[in-house]
Length: 153
Image: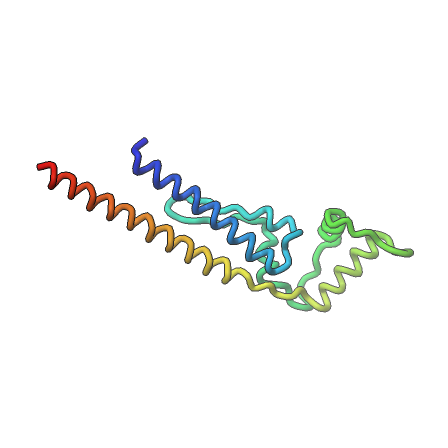
């Protein structure tokens, strides 16, 4: 593998890690630090594109849920309750609590957490900075090479 290709690969790997870290910091600011969706976030560089992978409900966190939208399945709420260790109190059962949560979401919706645009902006800034840095390295390497060749002649 050429030295130049190896340097580009190292820069890309470092940039992917920076993108993941920045995304997680933004999500933590929106109180998602204890959510498993934050751990699902993975950035990948493929075919000259940076791709953000996350659980499918990532989109619902960003866009929220309007009141009176289709009800969330009780099974999904039961799974979520188990994961979050939510236990019914008093005479409530798991099913009745899930049904109560389902109706609450149906009536009130879920508040939008608009961090998607912040992730895009931060990502673009990081990518632009790394590309500018990489371009600067290539230009200075080219100038140094030309000067060496000129002085060596």
